Length: 474
Image (cartoon, rainbow, N blue to C red; front, side, top):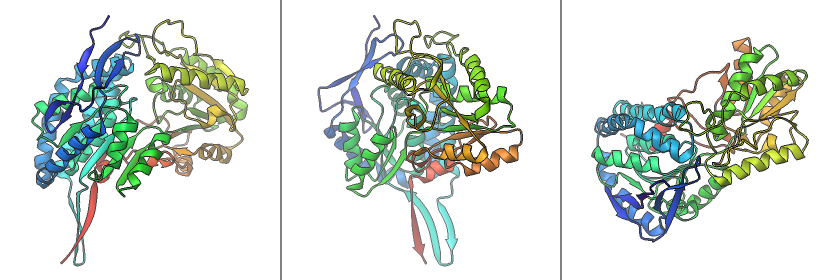
């Protein structure tokens, strides 16, 4: 039995303090199902204290030069890089991504973003431009409430918190209660690096209590939320009562269009990888593979061949490519979607419901072919390693199918002609499109169209989400 880690304090005004309430939340290792830690079940009173600390810290922090704020962030960046191995072990254990992948994705990307925002704080021109007698300046919006998810628990914290800090805002963060431990480790690092008290505050707890208290709080100037579309709508509705700015990064059901001239072997291999990353628990996962209808059997065979190489196993096993899903709830949800796909008549090419592993929240690689537009698995976000292969008649039909989704977060296009691929990419109503397997760019704007959200994260665009525009007439 693993010793249970006690992280039952919250971080307010530069100190670890007790919550107002007695509640505790268990954190489980999804590979073993054992409880590995307990964190505080925060209260609305905790949020009041954290917001008051952030409000009190805002004048001094926002009045620092960008270079001075950047220097603080550089100290955190240096210390976080020294602790990279520990951060990787923590996030791998609490949310299940295999260690080798977690080092690159769950930790490597956010560490790069911390360094990027440290540099941006120093280099960004806050006096934006001159228009005749008007000087246009950008100023920090104020106190930011950040609500973050469990699929990329460190990365999503960094994209919000460090962009807001670079902009001159102070922050109250509610991390996911499912995988909060890496956030606590980050708070330890920020504290050790000497970040001024009240600039960064952490209150753990459940969304309907802590999340809603942050969204509703009259002294919170902006809320940035990442999670499900359903929860995002609730955050926006609660925040509207105080007319605060809301940034939302929500769900996806992204289409990967493989055109008739594409290299099928390369396109299918890349598409399967982009669907199964993080065991499919990725909002940008390319879960709909759109192919010429007459080539569906060939594509299904190729996809199955690739998917069988995605070894399911414990995150600590070097051979594992798919770790467990994050919780028993998520496992049951994904299995239910597979059941629905079978019931609605899709062809189950590869069935991942039974992995043969008796312990852990595992679901193996799953592939459906012959999926049609009205099927549930073609419309709803599954958030598991489930790929739906769909047929199209021609290029226009492929674009139409891609755009029928209520979501618009990511997408892909494959073609032997890069110009043709880009022309199709421009027609897809989505915030991000990979062409011929292009690499993810952490400095590029990230966000969605339609019900995938409002606003952008990453790089300059992510920084500017946390700035107000003021016109000074002289």
